[in-house]
Length: 94
Image (cartoon, rainbow, N blue to C red):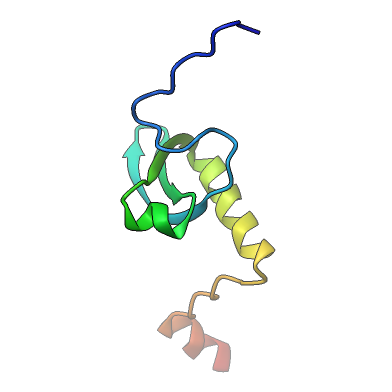
């Protein structure tokens, strides 16, 4: 461990390891996945004073899918089943 701590990165508005609330997110497509940008604030006052941290994560398509499924399952939600097409509904009755 260094005797002299490194100065904080100028883009960071809160200390690493501090609990923050997610206040937004965006993504950009990459050739082999996505760049997920998660915006968070340490407090309501931080949010009101625009002290928002932006963290970027590079995810493969598979990682993004697994994360989406995990978040849905952990909140007890499910994806809606796609509706059956007209031909499929008609032939089921025959």
